[in-house]
Length: 578
Image (tube, rainbow, N blue to C red; front, side, top):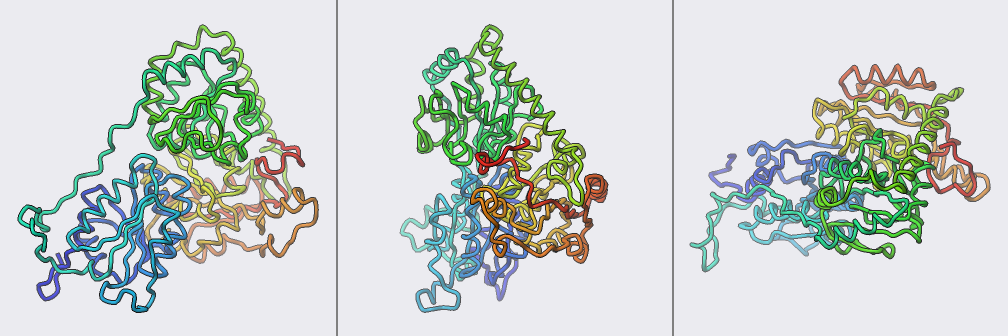
């Protein structure tokens, strides 16, 4: 342990020890002046992943947490560093990602005296976290850090924030002034129990019986699986339930991967970013068992799915999520895995229900027809550009089943979410919950979490990629072999299409269009494997080479800004292919 003149920096090592003992192996950051903390993290064997901005470090940590299923930690220095961390936490909050934002504050000796870069930090984090704490005593720092990690992953996971004054990080160990000091454990012996998930809530027998009765009376039932299924690591349980009762499965965008999408019972993603067939089936269902989804605007296509006539049972680990967006027939507070296992045991086999059999076969036939239509579009010739459908189809062909796809928001989320079928149950698809530019730093965090056995691929537009170009250096320095696919139409295409079709006029080009930048040349200048392509065959060749390099790679794909992704936004004005 490093010392200066025999003084031991107590709190920095307490923080590092609490992180280590709670299972944290990496901290994502852009460094500030808290030098003792970096030494303490190194001394306790915690890797420090230095990004090029606080926003990138937050997103890397967010993706790392989503893939590992464990809380991840991001640091920001007081003032602008903390403000940048807070600004980047929204996506993690929307996605229920277990992050701990650890920020320092100005020294307690100069608080409220207009110190350089001083800000009142907690209010900035209020709307993007579910819990906050401020360390005011040196002997409680480790305890509160461990508590933050527990809370981040508990119940409905989400970001938390903890503030530590910079002078406490470097504070010398001192005896407690508490009258019961002799009853307190000594600081030097402080340890923190590993994070253990509490026993998750299980459904009552009455709730299971009620669901069984509703299912038996239905004619066109579906399961709708959300992010909560993946958070509970319950994809296999949900698949087993679907197989037991023979009910088709829809997912939300956040729940994609709750069932392998080449499974006969999988319909795909429903909602605002969805295939036509998935939303058609969601509208026709007369009974919907919604598991682990808050039934928000994206998942329900602006609150139009399921049909208002459908009987909906909503299952969530948090009671406050149930019935918030629509009237439901019943609400069940339960963990997704516990619910699926209990139902699979209690419900009868599907074999005897003729109505369900007819519905299931109809769904299967329609999904097969949609698949044929999609492949026809993906193989349709294009001159001077590549159809995004072809990009997705080729990526699916060349990627392994356990590889990861990370999609940005907007059209990228739709191209990936609606059209790229995941072939393995579990968290193999991540998407921005709403933040443009999220996918590129996210694919770096996802690749770190995935390890050497799997590759992570990003699907990002040129507008989104522009947010974090500098982190090409991060990918190289940290030797992260992720493959970034930039769909480059030199524009913000969602807005361009919106002007042309939603408003029925000419686009306002000054807020839609960019210069035609060759991002492959930019990436090559950093030293990344890079290629620019404008045909499907060229993309296939470049992707094969990128996969073979096992290095950071970027492929700049020329696409048309006139091509509309599978979103429902323009369905009243356009006829979609898929």
